[in-house]
Amino acid sequence: MNDRIRRVMLVAFVGFIRAAAVLSLSVSWGAGSGWAQTAPPPADHPEVTVHGRKFTPRSILARNMGTPEDQTTQFPPHKIIANLYYVGTRTLSSFLIVTPQGNMLINSTYERNVQTIQKSVEQLGFKFSDIKILLGTHAHNDHQEGDALVKEITGAQTMAMAEDVPALEAMKPGGKEHPIDKTLHDGDTVALGGTTLTAHLTAGHTRGCTTWTMKAQEGGKMYEVVIGCSLRPPATLTPEVIAEFNHTFPLVRSLACDVPLGDHPAQYGMQEKYAKLQKGAPNPFIDRAGCKNEVDIEEAMFHALLDEQRRDARR
Ligand SMILES: [Zn+2]
Image (cartoon, rainbow, N blue to C red; front, side, top):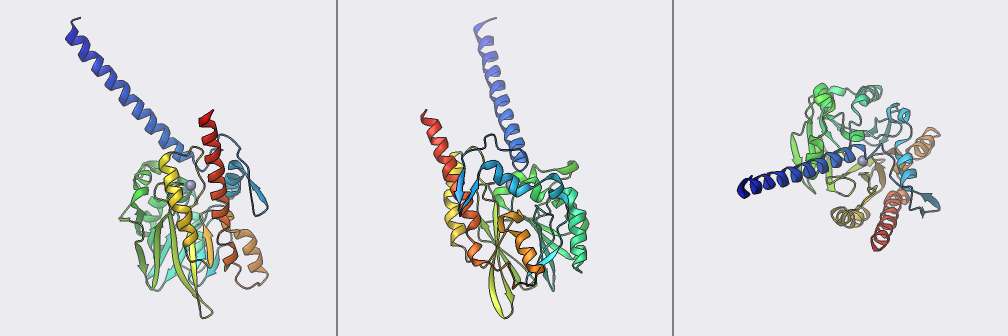
């Protein structure tokens, strides 16, 4: 073999190795992001205490997800405030916003839950086919896997934060293309029938994690509603993720808030509040004191993870 051929072969070999490395990296990243909600974190430390309660990475995940049965069992659909309703399962939130010009849905959750969401919408006296706009909080399958099916049934227009588009496009249940009719950017608004939702980019948990805010009028008063995106940090904090959270935590704290909600009901104590509602209490979802609970927990966990990661790196 002469030198020239040897050199060409070497270049081709290096190129092949590089491509394989990139491919395996992107495959494992893709799988990792898909697992994010269901695989237990690799380690169950650090532990943080927030408002007198202890949390670990695994206890937060367990609190969010519950059992597989919790993820797919209908929670009694109910009015939260004004034209905003809960139509999700016990542990995966789905919100319906009803307007005279049609309705909006936030989070289709798993595709296998779409029928349950439809049932909840109908039990509240609304038509599933009246959903005109479909939105989401973030590109994980427990929140947005059902988007294609919801669009298929309702014909709703789907909109997604630009930074979450690549992860959403990789989400193809049964080979269905993920529908994205319109790309949104931080601060964009979505309006229908007199209700305006504002999309806030609150990245970290995913690149395009979106916190939605809207105003709700009840009893002659106006209330600020915050539908939070998950703030749960991943096990490994890359420089990009650290920068995202450093921007997101103060932003979330700065949002005007009377009614805190989240993409997992445990983030805002839905079960306890719903129980109070059944006893005829004044609207328990109006909870100014609870507005910072979730960010307090996740920010404490983020800093504890960061300290641990920096300590390990020095070893
Ligand atoms: Zn998630």
